[in-house]
Length: 185
Image (cartoon, rainbow, N blue to C red; front, side, top):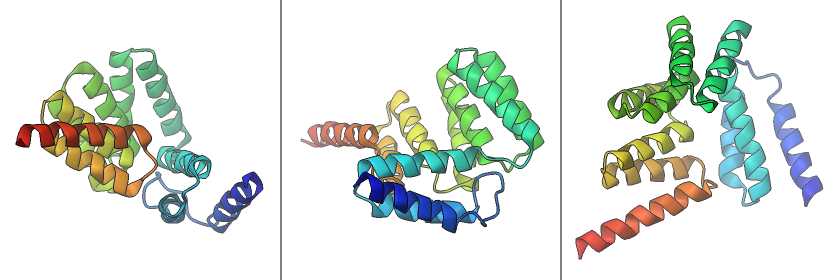
């Protein structure tokens, strides 16, 4: 089973090696990865495919941009929201078509409690990369923070259509569904 998973992923990646690498979204490799993600029932394989999707979203032809993104992520992980915001603002100003810059800045706004700005950035992310299940999950979390369960559920369900292997997202969606059905009684 493990050998088959490795072989399948290797073949998938080899088939997409010639695909042009851009700023993540829109490259041909993503189409094959999303197809593989939806088609598999093997959770370990799905996790590997998901990692490759995230790697594709982080790709950018400008090495300096990658360094600024990495610095922003490190700042975000260290709860240095001012540093993260500066980095992601630089990324967006340099390349406003780079979806992951918008998504990462939305994460900072969410952590700062600026939910309106987070929603705006997540929507922008989704305009650039409509399959961004991370942005849809983030949108669901923002709506939950705003105590808006119906739009939260719609966003989480949309993320699950794209990536049915998001176990915690499925649990959250089921919890909201249960909550909403209790309110309907």
